[in-house]
Length: 102
Length: 157
Image 1 (cartoon, rainbow over the protein chains, first blue to last red):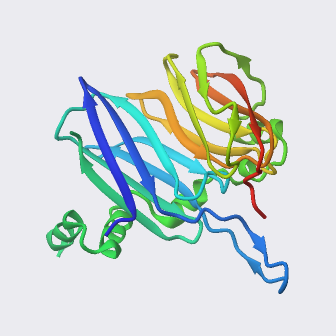
Image 2: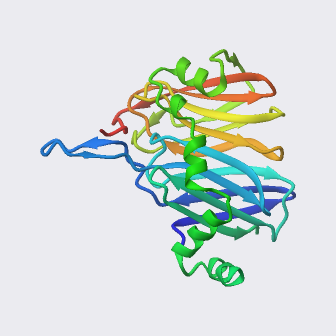
């Protein structure tokens, strides 16, 4: 199961995409007691596709909140079109989800 | 084999397979992505250096056509909702900066031709300060800023 919640809705030919991703988005932290350093863990890049064509890429730092929310809009879409979101984090892990525009 | 993978992906029943398809489809390969991530910009501790590293210059023109929707007072600095919208045309990039964060550059959005000047997300803010939206239209960079008061800082560490 994808860890991304994705919804795309069309108003005329303008499509609004809303997504909620599950991810800790943590910076590098040092345990105060043990001094052990926990490396940062965050989504670095998000790619958004409409019917297979890239409409947006986002590069993120750890300054994006935990469980990132992302919304954007594009023109030239219609109900039934495919919208896909994928992400890669700094450990190389990936996830993606696809939905149909409603 | 490919059609089998596609069916699993569409079913969404196996997250691992779905991620595997995304990677194998060449959409996002970890190596390519991590190479393209603007490291110098994200690791800059000052706004001008971050913008220079990202866009080649830190010179921005203030624009009233960029609207930043953000709370006047953020209840929780770890989750501050920010929406940037602009009616400008020819926009290729929107950058989000939290001026007083340890690393001010928070996000960079590269927009396609048909993508509108609109992004909405949630950011961490370490303390009270301005959120700056930098919009690249054509060869020029425009900027707007909005002050957000932060009572409980959200940068952790």
